[in-house]
Image 1 (cartoon, rainbow, N blue to C red):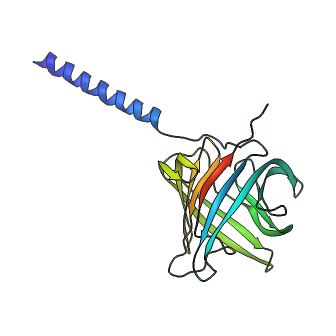
Image 2: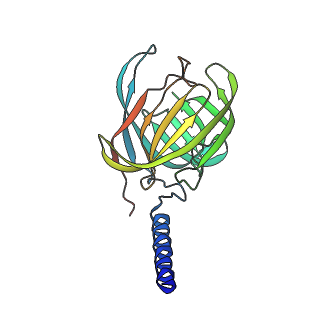
Image 3: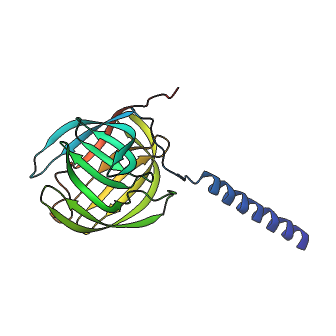
Length: 218
């Protein structure tokens, strides 16, 4: 009887160990940023409502690859028409944005929208100074990011497996869905709390990926 119980216990522990190992293998993790080749594009459908106006508009973002900005080599993105750019570092941390060829926002030292590796349950803080050049004002910002889930979502461009990342500030609760293999944000939803103004400019309530085109390297 004791030998039978011992065999049952060994079998049970083996099964638990196997399931744990399988769960560990299947747990999604993004070890580092992925960059679409320069020239690749994504087109988002932005939706806005409320006192700042309502409607939809399409914006195409193009990856420029490494560019010079503020004496540094950084990653550049053209957002919409020429003259509108975002600059991010090698870890996908936001450094600055430019609108109509003029500085719009500058982050000191950066806004850590990502912290690698990414996995469900991970949380991190981003504390920075943000300079709003249009009103010559610099403010302190404190944000908390949390990877809430790895889930499949469907948008007009198709179905994607994404990390759902929530950003919390005293005024906002924002969510983005990031596709780690493409290195693209697929969807976003932004929301102010209790009628508080959104912390920056006049952002949309949300966006969905309509289409994307990745340049094939030779």
